[in-house]
Length: 153
Length: 153
DNA sequence: TAAAATTAAATTGCACTTGATTTAATATGA
DNA sequence: TCATATTAAATCAAGTGCAATTTAATTTTA
Image (cartoon, rainbow over all chains, first blue to last red; front, side):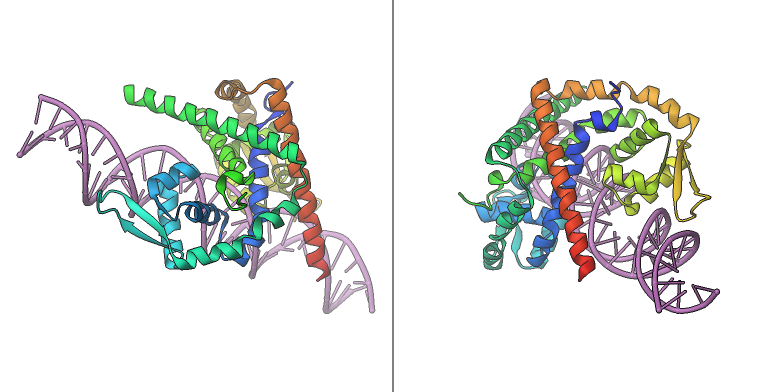
């Protein structure tokens, strides 16, 4: 078995399916004026109302290099506010605005419409979900040990 | 169950795991001077030696907007050549060079090293592989029907 | 406590991705 | 056959992602 054959890779369908799913979301998200990354950012805010950039990055596996310009855009759209924490000025706190909260109602129809695009049984979806989070967990471990090794050197 | 909660999404771990895996590849690929997208492009060339941009895009689910600049970079590195087809000048044919072929030997160690980073049983990997290709297949169908509907309108 | 280390965002540079448009070549049909 | 339609790449604009560096604030420690 050729280890460099595209069809023998597990990573490639993961990479391709992820882009494909985001592409499926695009027209639905365009109706509410969001990109996919903006959408998952808003999801965190709809859950927590207020969150630091650091925690947001931990939740989404994204760093400030991606989040800073994205949050500035969402602020400009009036969906959130950005302000330094009074306790620790290094922390920037992001807060949902009433407009941002209102957008949630419009977004509520999106998951169901996406669901119609994907035909997996509940069991298949559950299995996939579990395997993906297993992978994510292992990758977090990897990043941490790499980090520690780097600090030691 | 809140449909807009991050942890209730199937798409989010897919998106995050795909980026995470590519990040794991990065240091290994840096040793052979490739990015992940360049790596899977070379994979197609290692299999076929010669391929049109159109077929390459079909194999990788990428369009000329991504591939054109990427192929120019690989050409500049001497790994492939780009030339218009004599039969049909609209087609650009990409061909592996001896240097590109030689790079394959260096890349051969990468899949095993990546495998060490991910701890899934053969059965789990097979299940994940199957589900991801099932998703990819459904998304292809979606894109095609959307395309047809658009052409009709 | 003052210097050194650490932390959190922001910034910068590079490499994608994608949608939309443009350009060039080929195929079609009145 | 010549205008029209189609096809394939290339180009362009906008939005990520990420590594590396910088800046500002806070801790730690000698």
